[in-house]
Length: 81
Image (cartoon, rainbow, N blue to C red; front, top):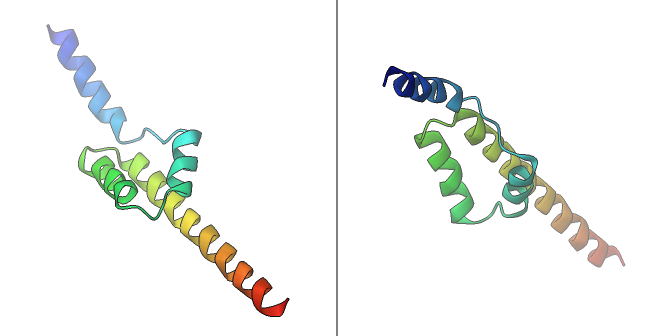
């Protein structure tokens, strides 16, 4: 009986240090504009997954920057050609 409580306590201690997988980071970066992605990242924070929250926010900000740069370059290309 005590082993079960020890396992749960150990899982709670390591829960905040679990990172996102590479595929999850890619998906958060590609689908960074939706409410669902931002609320999923917030639910990581609410459930105690601190590292997943940080990784998701970083991936979404990177995705937004890439989309912004891409759109800017596309518009500049259209203007100058």
